Length: 83
Image (cartoon, rainbow, N blue to C red):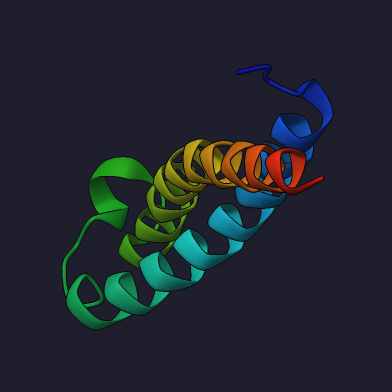
C-alpha cells in the first residue's frame, strides 16, 4: 500500500480552499441570523457575524483539509490498482 505524496498535497490544498470559503459563508449566514442582535461588539471589538465567519472559515478549512487528503489518497489508490 504505497502512499502517493502529490495527490495528498493537492487534495489537502483543494479541501483547505473549499473549506475556508464554505465555512466562512456558513458562519456568515449563521452569525448574521443568530448573532446579529447580541452586543458582542462592545466586548470584543468585532461584530458577531464577523466572528462567526472567521470561526466557520477556520473550522471548515481544518475539517475539509483532512477530508480532501483522505479522498485524494483513496482515489489515487483505486486508480493505481486498476492500471
